[in-house]
Image 1 (cartoon, one colour):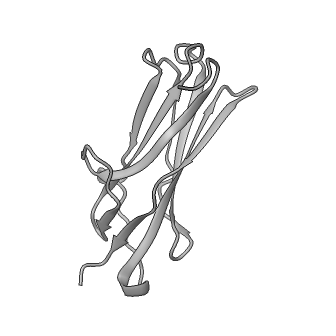
Image 2: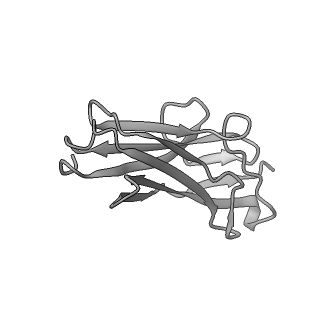
Length: 137
């Protein structure tokens, strides 16, 4: 658990749309979601401080970014000190369509960030496990 005035992302990962567990491989036209899990210390978890969470999905194979760079804004009111948010985009999730890469396989990662308070902000970053998107032959 973080210090009383600290807040952080503890995990970012991908899963199938409406799935319950992390997954690291998807077919090229299959939707997936990005999940970000956060924890806050006892003093900040119910503080009502404004926050913003964002994700960027990077294609490591061809150095591109998926077209959805999503953010969520709110106020910190996490009674048990934890928070989870899901970033679906488009038709219920991200839909990567990799170009012609090595054997039609592209490696991706998510970069998630959290900023609490606009003045003297507390900031946290997390990277997801690398995941694959592949063409079906």
